[in-house]
Image (cartoon, rainbow, N blue to C red; front, side, top):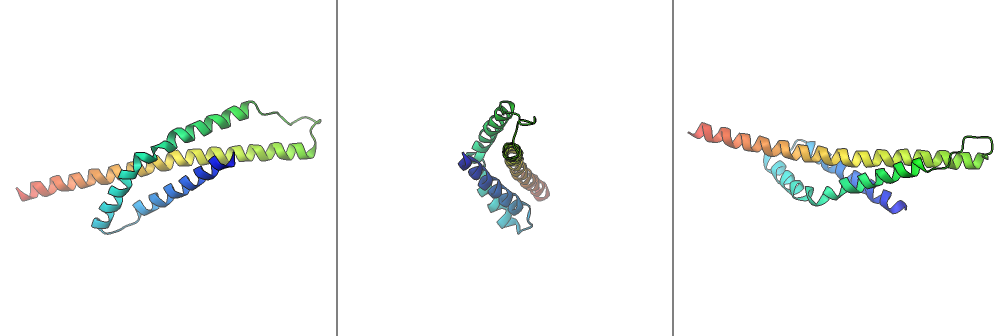
Amino acid sequence: MALQWMILAYVVAAEAAVAILLTLPSPKAVKSRIVSLISLNLQPSLFIIPFSAFQLLDIYWKNEHRLMCTGEICTAAERDRYEKSIYKSQRNAVLCTAACLLYWCIYRICKYYREIQSMEEVEKRYKDQ
């Protein structure tokens, strides 16, 4: 059960590293190679969106069908376990949302960089004429 969250955490960490790498200033030749390499990996890494969506649905389903422990019949251990499961669910929801948002940010950064490159090429052609 924890394997999927560990995988998702590693993917979020990798996406964060890639986003930082994309936003760091670097020479134009290095930047274009980095963007082209990451653009090639964007389509295969799209699996993270449905995977995160499925995990969010699983969190929602478990939240709707969770036993409530609010009455006086609950022991302290049961109440602690209930609160711990709530915190884990919230953490996992944040993890799923971060995975989707970071993927979208990386996609948009790469797209903007390619658009800037094409505009620079058009500008260069107009200057050469």
